[in-house]
Image 1 (cartoon, rainbow, N blue to C red):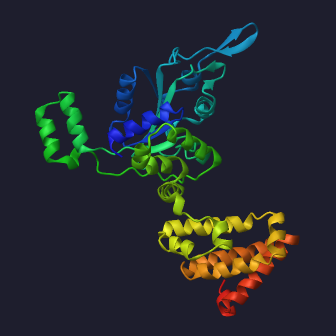
Image 2: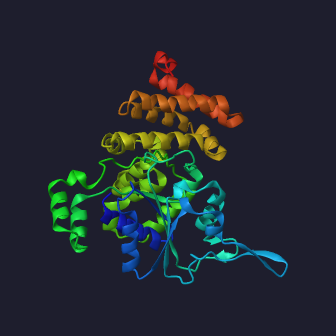
Length: 362
């Protein structure tokens, strides 16, 4: 992302009480962006270069008080609520202070010291492919899931504008205008993160989206969501926002499939169809016993089988196999009523598909 986009999203995320983590190569301007935000929002900026800090620097030193050990406030601790704490090189924090960082992120406190209400927190990190010691980098998914991850790339046009405002020499500005490829090392940021959705990540995303307009969500929704729930879930979520009224739900597909629904499915892209199959499998797996009794009593498993057959005509063979494999798997791993239902549904599918050899490929 360009610096102006990073600046916009970082501010929105912090305003919402969440924490952005800006990834970018050294010297790309991560700290400068936060300095601009601090200046424009009239906030004190506190920068903690975490890779260079000892435990006492971060958490304060112990002291005796009425026969109890208490920790003195570290010298960087904010006294007012109009502060921004920037935790730089957070993925290079020494193991001895990681618990304290986690407490700061989760509880907004360290020991008995609580951050003033309204304090903003932002983190920054150089990507793991940077040329420095990577032996002790933080890669814990639980730790990384606390942030909105956003990637900063150098942009020559924006830098030239900034350089002009900062009154840098004309020779350097003209050189970058003519040779924009020399503004950075040319590498794109590569994080090697495998972000996955969770109840907490959706909650965090909701907090920020509520602080954005519809136009802002259209422009930044995917970037924002992919930085907290991962690209696959983000893509599906954005598609849902754009086509929410046209997105058929599993229950409708399995029990009320008609030409209108089939036409909507035909218009889906591969990602949307894959999501639909995942939702169908999850719906079938999570059927309650009361629902199963109703389906068996009313012979609705026959409708399900017929509709799965119709669906198989407009989706890939692998997707159709996925539904059948899962039903067969549920039949083998469940017991009692559920097992009987899945076996009955699988038998009905064998009948309506009228091709035993095809089923044997599962």
